[in-house]
Length: 609
Image 1 (cartoon, rainbow, N blue to C red):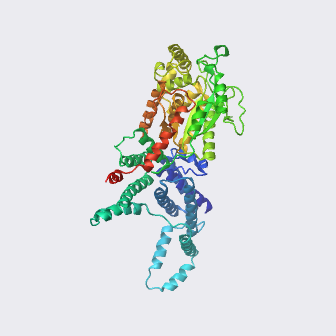
Image 2: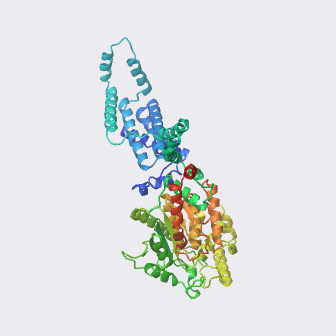
Image 3: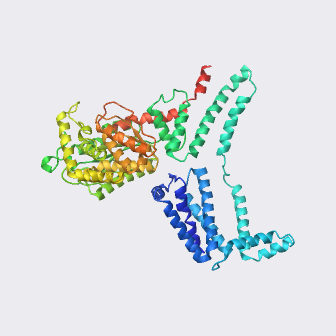
């Protein structure tokens, strides 16, 4: 009986994962259950059918064909009902909900096993019909029938179950919170309130003045309640996003007149699943690393930057002492700042109060020269991605932040980024190379030409004609990971991991400039869903950023995800360190405030009257 109950009850999991939306609970167990988000896409109908046949076989061996059929049908009926209940309250199913469903199903299967008794190939349908006939034989005395039935151990078990269920339900109904099957009722009440207002007798001028604010508040609340209800019923990010955009269109402004703010507000609201989102404890993570191609030619590098490789370490010292650009802007906008060394040459001491810390997954000497060999091994790429994921998990646990910003430090990383974008988009090298960190206000064409030569050299090393043709047959995930292995860099891989982890927890991220956009392109190649959380803060002076953003928008469109809007700021920013993202924090807060507090058109007109 235990084996059959264990087997059949677990049939509920693949069935619910296949037929229902999986919702990340974002609670203390979210990391434990995170694998179910990926498992959702691994469960196919073939696997559900295989699980069903396996469960049926086990039940058949123990109890015979007819009883096995009844048991499997009972499992599917209960699972379907549980799935509908989960969709109603949660918008889908989640880890603990699946566990509870399995526990209840196991209990019900054990009850069925007791009803048919162990080691008996009893025809359950025949037994049920027998009980039915006994109950409705009019000639027999009801009392004698009941006494006769109570002698049957199976009937006694069923009666005990019913009694315990009634007692449990009675106790639960009078203790704690009551069931809240109110969504349709709230919708209906909101509509009735508006209808009642319309159908009331025409009030006197004095009554109209007295009740004016109350009525308008009801109408506004009614619109918001309707939007909230639609939001909770929506099964996908796209549906929630559309609900908020429609609600924004009904507010006191020309439709779409707030441009990027409206997209950002809808995106944040859809991620938080409410029309009253909040921005609390924004956190900026800067990842730093050195690149082999930035080393001097004497040190087997390419000397790709106007600055020596040692400048990376100097920038970290400035950030650690509060003197860097990111330090100043983070303090100005009340944003938590942490700098993570994932590959800077040399040792980073760190400490309890230090801004700059060394990741446990750090590459001690940075990446290798991408023009002569692979920049990293696959293990090193995985380590850097894990470093980024770990930092986001720690920030979420420590600060409970719901907005993440990412920045980077690394001499030579614009060259690496140009190579990555060219490899992933097949764009011409000339169209993705810019001036990078220059010594003057304007880009030096000599420096640009040198960068083009280095990127071409790297691509020729790793992508000859045959390899490029074959890479078209690879999926996006494999192409992205392959590009990181061949071209680097460590801080870019760490940002990819951080973005994937933020996406897993539905945390919106402000994408900084060119290098961070490159990381975003790779993250979207690995997981298209990551495009949901991306807010592009600044148009870079590096022309390759536009190529990367176009590719990200194309991937989002292909996967029916709201296409991220173009960068909000166009200020000629090219400092890096997450500075553009830090400047955009007030814009995100403003977008959220608009959604929460902007009045309806009726309210504004009434104020005028």
